[in-house]
Each structure stands twice: as C-alpha cells, then as structure tokens.
Length: 81
Image (tube, rainbow, N blue to C red; front, side, top):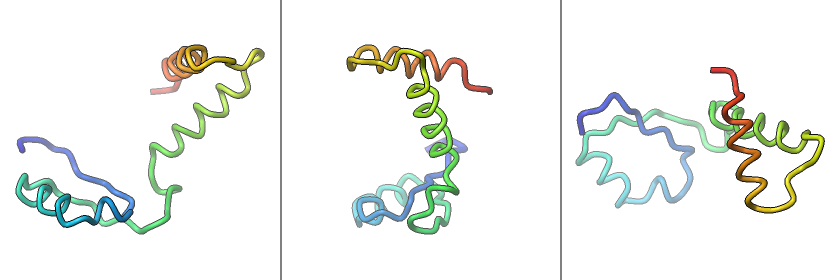
C-alpha cells in the first residue's frame, strides 16, 4: 500500500484478530502502539465530543434522524480546522 497512513487502533478484540493482523502485515501498513481503553488519547474522540455538545446545545435540538444528520453536518463544517 503506497500511503503515509498509520493504523491506529484501540487494542480492541476485533483489531487484534489474526485476520486483521495478517492483512496489515501483508499490506505493510504500519501500526501505532496504543494503550487499551484510552479514548482521551485519540484525537477523533475529542471531535465526537465537541460535535455532540454543539448538536445538543442547539436552541432547537434535532428531533428526527434526518435533522440530526443535517445538524451534525452543519456543526462539522463549523469546526475549527
């Protein structure tokens, strides 16, 4: 695989499966050592938290799945880059 990507998992059971490990090795995808149960170290968890807070804090919270999707997309677009 010609990429600069690094596979970052949370050491959860599906990520440790032999099939997953074999695939990562066969594609020479580097893996980052990661402590189990440490969402505070994962940057995307902070993004999910911010999106959740912003969406829940709207003056009119979403009432349907479609409204939730639209609210999340709008809040995502407003996140600082």
